[in-house]
Every structure is written in C-alpha cells, then in structure tokens.
Amino acid sequence: MQSSFWQAGHRPTLFASFLYFDLSFMVWVLLGPLAVQISSDLHLTPAQKGLMVATPVLSGALLRIVMGVLVDHLQPKKAGLIGQVIVLAALLFAWLHGIHSYQQTLLLGVFLGVAGAAFAVALPLASRWYPPEHQGTALGIAGAGNSGTALAALFAPGLAVAYGWNNVFGLALIPLAFALVVYAIFAKDSPDAPPSKSLHQYLNVLKDKDAWWFMFFYSVTFGGFVGLASSLTIYFHDQYGLSPVVSGYFTAACVFAGSLVRPVGGNVADRIGGIRTLLVMYTCAATFLFILSFGLAQPLIGLAVVVAAMLSLGMGNGAVFQLVPQRFRKEIGVMTGLVGMAGGVGGFYLASSLGYSRQVTGSYQAGLMIFAGLAILAMMGLSSVKMRWRTTWGSVTATTAKV
Image (cartoon, rainbow, N blue to C red; front, side):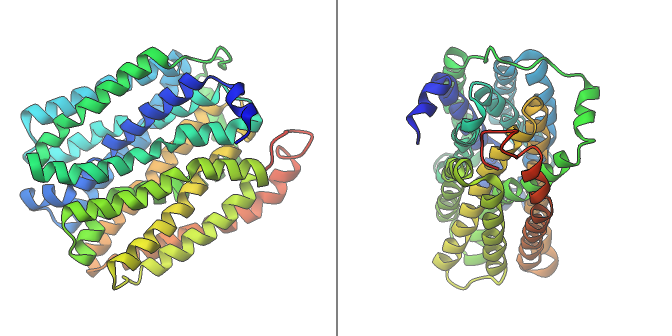
C-alpha cells in the first residue's frame, strides 16, 4: 500500500470507523449464529428461521437511509453515537427481559438493524478525509468492518452453549461499550463536509439511472455476502449435521475470507479499475454459488466452495465502492445510504429465500441457483454500461482514478 495513503487522511478516524463498523456488524448478524439454538428452544420452522435471520438484514437496509439523512444533517460522528446507544439499549432490554417467542426475535431483529445501518455512518466518516485516488483503499479499510460478522459466528454459538443464548446478548454489551468509548474519543468529522441535503435532493439522485445500477450491483455483492453470513450456521447444521459450535466455526472462516478481502478488492480496483475487477468477481461468484447449489457431499468441500464464493463477493464489495465516490462525489452520503440499503435488501432476499427453499423443496438448491443467476445478470448489466461510464465520468479528463 502506498505510503502516500497514510499521509493523506486522518488515521484515528479511519480506525475508529473500522472498530465501530466491526462491532456493529457483529451484533447485526448475531441471530444467525444463535439460530440453531434459538429455533430449537422456540420450535421454529425452516421458513421462520430464515425470516428470523433475515429481519435484521432488512431492517438495517431500510435504516441506512435514515442514517444517511442523520449523517447529512448532524454530521457522521453524532449520527454514529445515536445509533450505538440505541443498539446498546435494545441488547440490554433483551438480556434482562429474555426472548420468549418468535415475534420477540423479530422485534429484536428490527432493533439490531440499527447496528447494520452503521455502514451509512462509518463509510462517509472515513471517506470525507481522503482524495479520489485513495477512495478504494480508505473505504476498503473502513468497510473491512464486515469482519465483525465473523466474530459473531466464532464466539456466539460457544458462549450460548456455556451460558445460554439469552446471556449472549448481555455479553455483547462489553465490546460494544468499549467501541463506543473509542469512537467518542478518536473519531472526528472531516472539515471538508458537503452541505446537508433536502429530501428533494435525495429523490433527485434516484432520477439518475447510474444510481440504480450501483444499487443493483451492490445488492448482489453485499447481499450475497451478508445473506450468506446470516444463514451459513443454519446451512452447515442442516446440510451436514454439524453442531452449532462447529457450524459457527465454518461460518466464521467463510465470513473472515469475504470481509478481509474487501480492502484488497478496493485496492485492486484502484490499480486496474473497478469495472474490470467487478466483471471477474461476478463471474467467480456465480460459478461458485452454482456449484454449491448441488449440495456437495463432504463438509470440507462445501466449506471450500463457500469460502471461494465469499472471497469473490467480498472483493466485489470493495470494487463497487471504488466506483461510487467517483461517480457521486458530492452525493456520497446519499449514495452510501441508498447503495447500502440495496445491499441489505439483497441480503434479506437471499437469507429468507434459503429458508423458504428448504421448507418447500427440502433443499437449498433453488435459493442458491436464483442468486447465482442474479450475479450473471449483474455481470451483463455492467458489460452494458462500461463503455458509457469509461467515456463520460470515468474518462481521463474527469478523474485521476482508474474506472
């Protein structure tokens, strides 16, 4: 990584953004790694399990727009503080009062969605400190907070066995409180903040067809990543009969792979261009999801294929966000919210469709095949716009960065 990158922005903010994002994502998907134990105690059907782990994903998606508005009007730091306090309060309530029904898991899921909306705060907070040629790397580092989803898979099932799954909500308060203190002390808003926007300006961005393209592209890369991150503990348990703890370890390996390569995807996109990077990643993701849909016999082969799919989706996430700030520099707050929302909607669709696929057909094949088809559609869509993008906003006269 270029040494000039470390001189370009504000490192304490970059790392505070990463930590806030990381631990927020940890609790955002917490119901996924606990799903096997929760569904056993509450007697949930496969479809109910799917909807339970998908609800925080959808809630987080929709709340990203709300967070985007708060970022614009209050500045990112204050918006992040509000979000963290709401999540801490919801977990405290769940821990002290307990979760006793399917409806209560869905309600908790809605509040955990506030943690998923951290995306719309952490990325603008970091992004505003860096020039265009370093956007891919800066947003890749801040966005590597995706790895928090792996922390949940790694620790939650084992803690649930030791202390009961309801107490995991209380234990999660400890790292979250630490992140809140670090964030409050070290994160700073960039002096180079764009003026706040009216609702009318938000709607104006949606009149630009490129905004819709970015939303679709991210709904596949991030939707695939977070949909799988939420569902894999259930998948490995149902498909291979693994214990919740071992299923959690398998899930953590997949999610770590997908999140740790996000900065690599951003960095590769900075070097060879986001379009080229994305085309390769969609091809790989579609191929591996298609292979996975045939229900591989050996757990370790299944694990290897899921890891390969997550690597492709994770690098794709970094590549999308190398392109967004170049096309929508002035509207980056709005676009981070809109694109992030679309990513969450994609994740909700994948997680819930896997549950319904299992309930209706007895396997996950239909859910996985349809999502592989969406990756192919995204690849075709990107191929159709790449020439226009490269000759307009991505031309040498318009930007120093590679498109």
